[in-house]
Image (cartoon, rainbow over all chains, first blue to last red; front, side, top):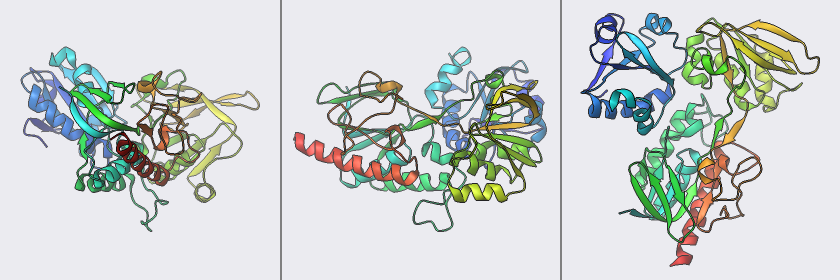
Length: 109
Length: 307
């Protein structure tokens, strides 16, 4: 995992995601999921480039089923952009970096 | 300034990776573009039992990861970026991506197919909320739940069997009166007590508040509709070729697949196509790999003929 990506869990969720001053992109993932592993380096790269604008976080759905359930995540990887504690944007599946940049242009621009 | 290559490959599934292996091993300077996931559709397949050399089967992820590693051993350059435009009109083939422009003497297209989406009321809103196109990604969310699998081909029935590891009940819903999957796969499904069938039937709507809770099923013979509770819907109802980029630049058949000659050359000289994106009768990894090899050798011959 890249140095600029924060690992979050049920304990740190409220502080790191809900209460964050910065927008947070959460990557809901699990070990069993091939596309999750493949997209991980893309998230690392985005985190390295845009860490001044958006916080990048990863939540393991296996270890944190309560949060995955709360947000009704039933497909992974799911990406959700949180701002002021609310989901502003959500998408499912691995994508190339450029696609993330355009989907998140409102926050990364 | 565009970067110069002997060969550019567009698409990193088994056909593209095999073409890359052959071309790199022939000492061509070759770059492969992949926009999403190396291994493509194969990489999310639970287990592949009919690729020769793996008597116990091998996961799609592991097989394609090994293909990638092998091709890179021989010098294939892999670039994870989407190709946004191509120009095949001249002797120099031009390929444009957000990170730069690339010129090549020949191109191999191995962009494959993507799964057709379930196109009924409720489907778009509930995708990722109970509707899934990847059993290996999402199966574990459905422990002790009731799921439906839409489709009757190999993908549908094999993924239904995979889902029995998690789900309490798996219902295969198929529009015809019998399945299309290989007999051995069908037999496993018939023998599995968690699997049942709704034949001659289609889903006409998906319902749920934030999460899938049920579907409307219509019997295509009687026209009768009924509500069936379900927590998950896994969709495997065929494929669409990824050829939008080549529309108007290459000859496509009426369904959008690229047509080629026996050497796998398309309607544009020096541009080849291999694997699922080319119309063929058997969409299997072994066929895609074989075609990838042939396309690479044909491309190499083409390049030599131009020098």
